[in-house]
Amino acid sequence: MNTFIKSFSFLILIALFSCSESKKEEISKKADYTWEVKDSVDLEFLGNPLIADVSPDGSNLLFYDYASKGIIVTDGKGNIKSQFSKTEDTPDAYGFMMEIPGFYQSDQLVVVGMKGVFIYDLDGNMIQKLDHPESLGGAGFMSFPGKHTETTKLNGKDFLLSKSVRMHDSFAGESKFYDSFRALELINPESEELTEIVPFEEGSMFLNGTGYYESDYSPAFTSKNGKLYISLGAEQKLNVYNLSETAVELDTVISFTIPGFQELEPKDFAQFAEGTITINGGTPAIRNIHLTEGKILLHYYPGHDPAKISEAEALWEQGKSEEAEALYKKLESELNQGVLIFDENTLALEQNLMLPEYINKDGFVSAGGYLWMEKEKDEEVEEDFLRIYKMKLVENE
Image (cartoon, rainbow, N blue to C red; front, top):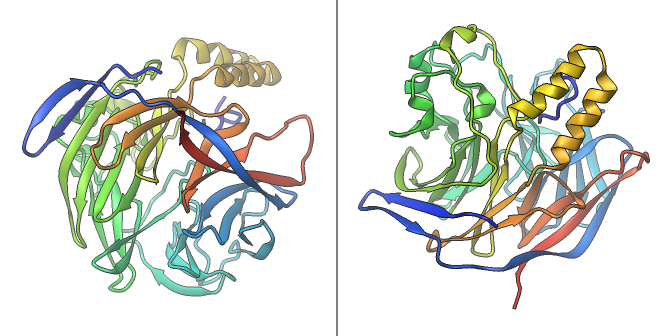
């Protein structure tokens, strides 16, 4: 079944917790935002590319192509400026990719792979390599448009933020793993130091004494002006931290409930084996977080009802792969996938807005005041281009 499953208004109550106070309140502000297409960019390329990142000023776009395992850089109009791959066994090869690439500074890009953290110029020449802080026995990778290694500025210096895969001599079948877990690596390219940050905080569902797949708690995050915004997979919370060069301090926790958002099934520690990593592409999750024009957008995927998805699994096990895939696609199309819109200054939740039907709902990029969304592909027609819509979030009068 896993071979065909994709790296698989409405809010009623919101709770805010800060270091100084805790309170629950019903949402009072009702906003009316909608999506508006402002422009589009076409990448003329025959393959299977996804949009990875856009430079802050929109002058360069970054793509990753599954078919060739290649990285593509274009100008703001979609014209290819450079493309390269690092599939050979060479000193500048990152190995198994752990996050899709992202821009770093104005003229560089970063790729986190099993062999380390690699910074290249836009033509693919390696500028710097940073080793992982501990040897990696394995890693999981779910690729979604726009879910790339992040860049942030602290005290005028450029830092990177990436998913951490440290195991601390443990694995997901032990309570020690959850006690020592940290979600992110704060990477200082200047000093070549990697600092692990963001634990499972007190009250987290992931500290309840049961086991979880990596996809259950995979972090969605972004940062700006010394603030780190992060959600951990299926946990319906937005944690806001004060971020420094060496640590984080929890500032505010916002809890919310998304109708139709599935609950994770508890897993016995005995189900997990040391040295293995399990990813379920259909798990409910906050998939990414974006900042745009004073708003915080939490992109969510509600997950499948286990009873319904079991029907597709049964068909797959019976060898009826085409029927199973058709049923899965039908179930996927019925999911309500959207974004929660928060005000960046007040952290007030303003709206739960569904994603447009004509875009790829797996993910999108935010940069330069726009949201860069892939056009949904026509599976009946082989297209030799990928269209990217430049979208705005606009408030109806």
